[in-house]
Each structure stands twice: as structure tokens, then as C-alpha cells.
Image (cartoon, rainbow, N blue to C red; front, side, top):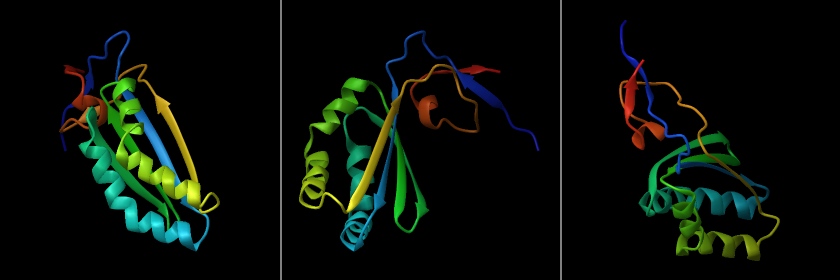
Length: 130
């Protein structure tokens, strides 16, 4: 089996960011809210200005994780000011013990490795032969 592996041409100071966020349902209310809204969260994130790609994963029945790729930290901050994020925070405010939320933001320091088709940061930066 033969296929090409490539890397991306990452600028010295990339603007792009990777946002990792997770949701853990801590009670029945959080569990039902999470599963009712999970596809809406992914869809509204994907449609947001500056979001290039969203990858979601189920960790367990009560935990999900999403990784999203953004053109810039500014675009991500704009998303936080939007209606979808406001709706989620509204639920958390009314039900402060129902969900455990966590997030981390990263800027790439070096290229990852890719094969076959662009995913993640490879959707933002041109590839270079390896």
C-alpha cells in the first residue's frame, strides 16, 4: 500500500487556532440537554464565520469533545459573542451543576502530517512535499 504523506507550509506566526472543547453531563438535565443540542452545537459552529472544520467525538455516554479549526483567534472570539454561544451559556446559568465544560485554545507551532486529503490545519495552509 502506497500513499503520499505531506506537511503544510506553516507561517512563522500563524493566525489560525485550534479550539478543543468538551462537555460532560453531570446529571439527567445535563445529559438530555447535551444530546438534544449536540448536532446543533456542531452545526452552528461549522457555519460560524472563520470556522474551517469541526471534528466531534463521543468519549462516553455522558461526555463529548469537539475540535474546531479557526482562521484566527478573532474569528473564534466573534463566535463567543454570537447567539449560539449565548444560548448555551444561558442553559449553564440556569443549570450550573448540570454540565462540566472545558476548553483549550492552541496555535500550531509546527506542521502535522497529512495523507490523501486536507484535514484540520491543512485546510488553512498550503501543503509542501515531504
